[in-house]
Image (cartoon, rainbow, N blue to C red; front, side, top):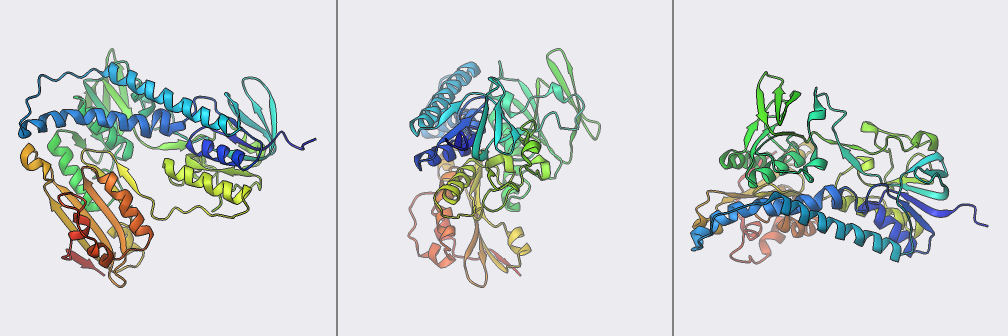
Length: 457
């Protein structure tokens, strides 16, 4: 008789948990997985996928305007919010069902309920009361938007990105608090769909930690497009009167709107999991503390993805899942590699980046050469739109190795993926220069920037 019910039990059916459970099962292990809400996790259900679908929807307004410069006459536009939400829901359901089907096909047993630890080797399923034991556990419960933990009086009158995907109607006016990824992306989504948008953030510019020149480009473009940016502020109170909300800043301003959305960070889903009963230690923001192999302080309990608060990106969670399976079930100890992870912000235009900013490069002791190009995309020579793209390479002045690539422009995310391959291989500026340009494209700027813009010691 087996000592435990399962070789591995996974808590959380998001991208990381699903990948780990499937691969462990395919490696011949008996695996169970519990998901209390819906398979797919933040990314599929209320994150990357629905957000990108909304981004596409928000871009058509500008596309219709741009078409006139190319000879097209577009009839009067009309946008239907409920159609977008319904079609998004249909696609999310399809993807979630696909996750379930793939897990079942691999031989994983699924439990559609919440699991909580009773002791280091036992969890209880809250709906059925069933107790399950496992030799190893993987915690992959993800995170949630900061809401109840905020210091804003009346935060119950606000929504987060979770609720934004399911609003009954499109707000005419919306205030978004937060200058990070989520705040910036939703500001552009709602603005593109015709809303009056005010973005409130505590810093002087949005997207702290990104390249300063790229941040400046985005701030200028947001101003030009009509997104109202209120910098150096935080919301202190939100009141509701009927269908209107009133957002108060720390400097006494009052902003009237139909909705206020909080995009002020995310926190790991660790509360109520019984981790104290399992002896699992938590770190900053109540995240599960793990080592380079995603192992907690308890030898047989691991954690991956946003619940560990390392890099909150879906491909990173999947990478961590694969490293976990290789380490634990394939006898190939594989530490997680968080070096040179590309990322994008789906603003309008997009921002995409990989590697070091010049600030980070200097902090790490590099002497750097910077190459950059600012230009008007070919499309907008006829559309009449005064949008300008910016490409930037940060290069090690001693070795000529490319340390970072930063792009502000349309299709930036598609371009940065291949730039990541080059940087991962240790490409030098000479390697970029030796590549023949594909013309006419924006991406060719990466291999045609021959003149150094400036150097810094």
